[in-house]
Image (cartoon, rainbow, N blue to C red; front, side, top):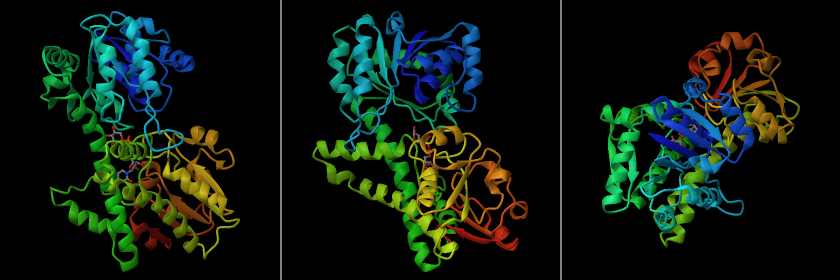
Length: 436
Ligand code: UDX
């Protein structure tokens, strides 16, 4: 099938390449010439495992191309809209400028029977507002939210847990749902749950899922706060409650909390939208979820201070990680970098290392010291803090090896990723988050 994908960021670039990899003919469209040039050469403009391979394959097969020219969308049967919906500069609400621009830019090139499938995360009600403009062309607007996780974006796009499509009532909606079944033919063939619903529900599924995930993380971090004043161990607590299948162990990782381009902005936008709808109190807990999350960064800094007898001034602190999570070079709202910047602000000599995100971090915070090589970064450190649980740090760095490089033997485990007993056994002062 011929498809167009408007917006070639994390979501759109992966979607375009993934759709080409399952046999479709895809044109990716973005206003950013540099991004388009890089994608056209088969070069992934960001780090995402597996993307490089499917991009190269797609371009070589002739089924995948990228352009800045919106008119190239003409002739495609389905037009996916995957542009960003960032947090507004002066508030919590989502900025819909790019969604509106993408849809309006597409209108002149739509034909009757085309489908416009919104993928961006939007405030509930956005699709209803866009519908009249799209329907005036004879096309149908559907909402098809994406649940991909960075680091697993290719897998999550080609082989998702579920597919959700919000459609308008009546025949055009039903036809559109069938067309989307054809688009996702490989997942449908595997009996992936395919949920057809109305537009508002589809929009809400996405924000509700992210709100739930964020709440789960902040719940366990709230327990970490209680554990800290009672001598309990939040990781054992998470293991114990996680055995209850109704609760589940995943997303109960206590530590410095969540970041990234989705969860923080999505829960804020959800709060803002609920307030507009007169239902602010229904999701008032999301303000707490956000507040707990931000307190954990502060707590990590406090732990470093406590571990170094109250002052980090002129102390060498090695920060392991910069990305908001492993398998990503994304530093948007990264708790890791936030902690590093705060320590620097307190007068520490901060050295950061990360397998993928150093260059992005350096652009944003040039005042910090960046070292590519992990062992080089650890040399002469007075304290180490683990803030992004890459395997290079969590699994491969042993306390014995670290001890041959550092000056002090103080470690702060901001992700509760290390075996406390092993580090203590090797003579380190180990400090976890929410652990005695
Ligand atoms: C998230 C959702 O998982 C995904 O479904 C949605 O489409 C986009 O937002 P992503 O932002 O890629 O995906 O990252 P995710 O893996 O969810 O992690 C988010 C943050 O939570 C990271 O900073 C991570 O370190 C943190 N986290 C995750 C925890 O602090 N504890 C956990 O137990 C799990």
